[in-house]
Length: 267
Image (cartoon, rainbow, N blue to C red):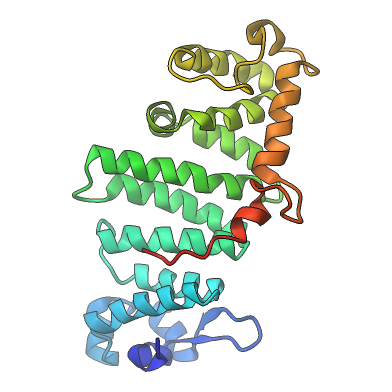
């Protein structure tokens, strides 16, 4: 997509030649700091119309499809500031930025996107309960890449995020296989003596409808409190191979292997 479609924006933001990221120009920094980065004021003072704003989204999509994930994520950040918070455009932009930051391995930024996306799903107007469930389910799946690649605290964030009532409801209703990651995180956590009882209650409730070799090892209730049990070993193995995987991507479930195939366009 040609940059002429977003020419008015280029007075405010520009692609840094060295870092390849989108940064505000001097004029853009003044506009943002003065609170004038709104659709009405941009249209009045800089000729940025609703059509130009949508062109910015299309340009971000094009950059994503070209593999320029940092630029795509940055364009979407500015696009989201110019659309209604509860709109489908806003939800679409947060999803796009979240995925682009993950594929660009900007995991700390992606973690912030994860929190914003959880709120955007809750606020989205006109979304049915089934659609909300689907969005939460996909958010839980994509978040695994974030948790497994944060410099520190990823395991604790996974436990906290998965145990939120809305997310736990999505797991039990739509994707019970994610309980293996929760099991792995709890049983290898320093706080496992506090969390194991809650985990066992969840696993017991789900044992009728779903079975998994990691979360249902023999005699789990009696072994869960021991650090060298089959349950903990199996959980750690799954967390290492399926979730994190070797850095060379040789494991088909590894982050490198999956991210290497993440070339689908933003919807």
